[in-house]
Image 1 (cartoon, rainbow, N blue to C red):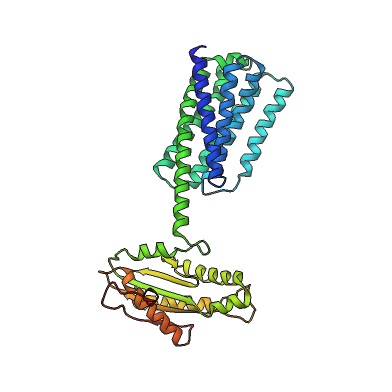
Image 2 (tube, rainbow, N blue to C red):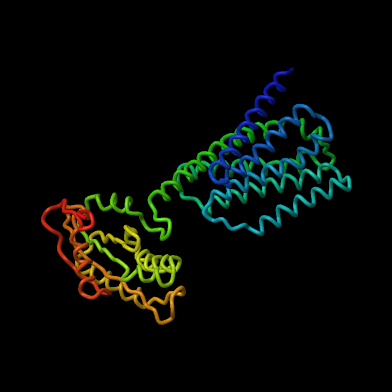
Length: 386
């Protein structure tokens, strides 16, 4: 066994194990799409390495080089695409890439010279990497990880694109597969691509891990129904001192139990989401702190600003038509507003906002009430006492 064959076997085993691990991880993470595409790309790389090792000089090696290279680049393109925020399929890329591959297949089928076949294959591979770079730019968050991945993909695209002028002006139309595959230029380009590919695989896996962590963090902090902060996340936020003070708004949907009893829980969920949508549009930190209860934090806001904001919430929600309810049914909400000073946390206003909310309930509902916070910073809300 030569050193080259031994090295190829090690590479094939490493790629195969990585493909298997990515496939298992994809299934474990609820069929993680980027990992699935990456597993496919690594599997293709494993097959190519084994074919180069054990079928060198055969027709199988030729077919592998001409067919598996575009397939590998297409899988890599999809792995990167599925990581980006923009998930829509680019029809133009699909048509162009498929067209180039189709031309290469037709040229192979009719026995056209290798020069023309490989030219279209290289154009397809280059297009796949250029499109991947464009996808990164369109969905990049400009982290160091994104920038590193973008640079690596661009360099890989340039290395692949370099073959096109080399084919035309250096090798020429009389080129054969053995001449091209064994040339020092092609071997040098392949060596550079191999190193870059390892780096890109590492960066893609790192990006997948970062995205997965961010997803789990978002799920742990957000209410599954409304997308607002959950009670735990809002309490943590409200426990952070605010330098300039601010306002806390508590709100509760009026007669919500009657809505559930009369129209069903799905209708109740729709009503909750409707109010959450109105609250969330302001951009202020907001959370769902109970079944039909919400809290809004207005940093640096005055009590007057809090009252105006709560009144806007109340009026818009009251005027909202709910498709799941009768045409004549209108739902309202009550609001309690309290301010806190710059030397305190928003939590110090919770008890006052809670009392103001219950005052609004006692005074007829569908209204806004305000109350100043007590002097003691660790006062508890009526619910906490209960």
